[in-house]
Length: 108
Image 1 (cartoon, helix red, strand yellow):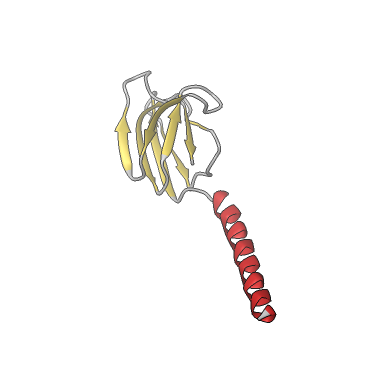
Image 2: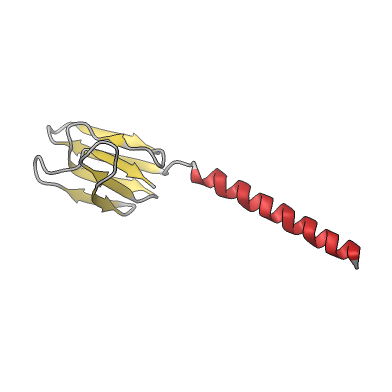
């Protein structure tokens, strides 16, 4: 009976170790796909497989965005990505008025 309890505890410990490892491994991944934008001055830009958790600049702001990734995009006007301006679900597009679009993006 004690041997069975030890086997159960060992299996539970191994399972918990796997879950901890898998949880930390997936939290540092990048979004899959391409985030495209048109700057206020008409310049096209894109970010391929953007990293999660980093505040990335959209130079000159965006008048049009195509979030063709598998991750929501959070849009900001202020550096540091602290005050949310707008968000976009995966595989969506959005237009912004001239001088009214976001300047930073973060994927979470």
